[in-house]
Length: 176
Image 1 (spheres, rainbow, N blue to C red):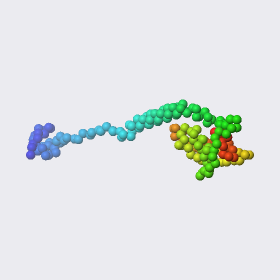
Image 2: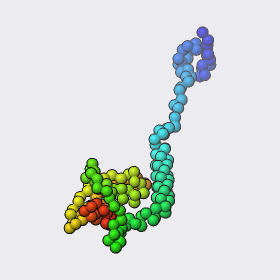
Image 3: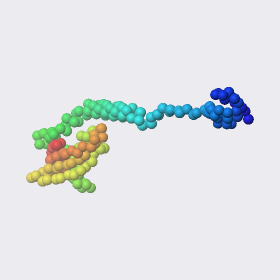
Image 4: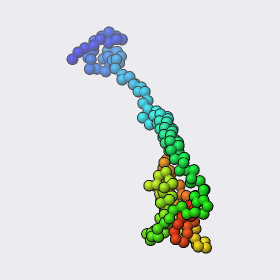
């Protein structure tokens, strides 16, 4: 065993002893220093603002792209939209389209469905909702409700009214 010199009395004593055997002075002990660790923020705390800002930028980018697509399709289809705004197609009471007599599986009046689809920007998005037929003298008034999905993906419900002769010729069409 090693011996060490006491700092107070200067006499030698065993290194295994906790204090000097002669004067009782405690042996110097290495006290563990208290380590203060900095608080580390979790990922969620410091990234919240960055995540919100990123989501806002993404939404603005999507809105900008959707607006650009909407504007480009509206310039390409101005001529087809102008004929769809509450106008009567027939002039001088002359029939526009002769419709062959057919039996249709649904209550939809197929020639009117085809006419509406020809006027739409996205005819594949056409969804028939209902059709009502009312006799007026020798002709019929056919009202059809349908759904159409816009280029941006919004679903619109629309109504169209057609006047048809008893031999199934469309006389006029009005979009409401």
